[in-house]
Amino acid sequence: MTSIRLALLNVAQKEDDTSRNFHRELDANLVEFHCPSGEIPDSYQFDGFVVTGSWASVYWDREWIGRLKTWVGGAVEAGLPGLGICYGHQLLADVLGGRVRSMGEYEIGYRTVEQDGENRLLDGLDEELTVFTTHSDHVVEAPPGATVFAKNEYGIHGFRKEHIFAVQFHPEYDMTTARAVTEGKTGQLPDERIEAVLDGITAEQYEAACQAKQLFDNFLDYVAEIRDRRVANRPI
Image 1 (cartoon, rainbow, N blue to C red):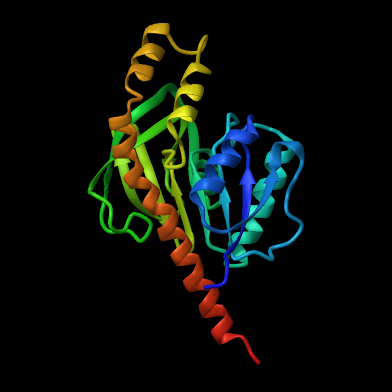
Image 2: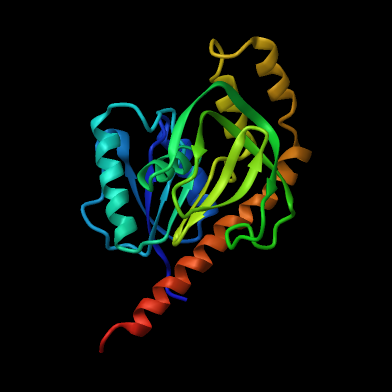
């Protein structure tokens, strides 16, 4: 199979860790753009795209966020398959007409998420998933016409609309990233809560959470199907 070419829209403050995680988990040709630095693709010549997590909020008034939303909206119109993770999940919801707002609290650490019906992205995974989460915004209303496929007590953790998939949790995290992100909440969360989350970052929990990494392969399989279908229908 010809390598899949994806636009990796890296919206993390610390871009290197995020870059490392996605390059490890996505077996594809990744063309990376660090959006907060003003890097936005100038075309839609990709097989699909991925929007990463971020420290930012989708409702902030920032030039790069506006430009990113415009590009993503154009990619959706062009029919490109897309995958959003955490901030990417929220941004895709916003672009597609859903609603995002602050939770007024944090969900952080290894948590349980339940599948809500069958879905291509989580195909082959258990109904209950162990995943790492870290967010203080959430999708309170899925986009019109979208199917919600994952939830927990904090709300929507996954939705799909046509060729777009999005999850609130972080399947790409390794233990190093989980610890670094948690330690980065010092001053934002009580010390005892940070310590409790750090205590929960164990090899056993990480191994359980690795099951969710299957969604990356599922997404790439879907992107390949859409690409091959377009090639087959292209006039010679």
